[in-house]
Length: 301
Image (cartoon, rainbow, N blue to C red):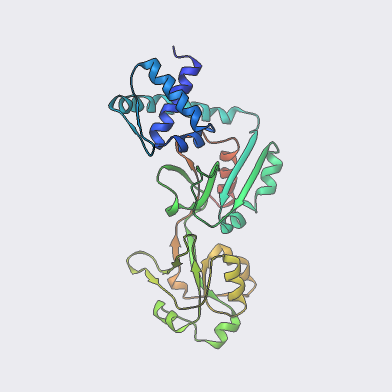
């Protein structure tokens, strides 16, 4: 039977094998790179087999290392799943959650339920960092992130927090009183539009309609904005038309501060997802947080 220290050493090796980097594996395991290097030297000495080829810039598996990594994957993943299953039997989760989320997700998903969450799980401390920039959550020390499904890295576990989201075009009554409302995407070229700057600093085209008939329009703009709140305020003040999530402007539509145009050209987009490293046991409280957000948005399975 393997000792606890031997299991720990094998887990270190598997983290390095999967990440292809001492630095990334060290962040995953909350250890230093020097500690990982020492562990690997000790493991290779004990096994009398070289498992990794190291250079100053890269790490790769030897043939023996590949065979060992493949064999370990199944066993250690099963252990991780067993430990995850214990979460349901604990009286209450204890610990901290460091989460990265864009402004819209923080406002629409976290803010409405955070009071209920902290009352129900008072021993969980939430550290929410609001940032629209695309980042590497592992490298920057986050337990999880929230992004649209299409922008979640493929090596992450992604849990949908919402159904697919509807995107619409809106304008203020004052603006639409001065301009003929558009009925087709081509009509937008005759309008003043508020362009969207996304996290990588590119201008996002408006996606109108669904399926083969979808039109992607690089709208003309009187201004470009990288934040939804400023976009909505500008639209309400008559600056121009805005393209945004329907759920983000639900209250403004109900109060008549904004009006939807081209309803037949609304577009369904990716849901928001909670995501975290696929090979790491989810931290205490993350499942409970995701479940509360999902129920709040009508997802019960």
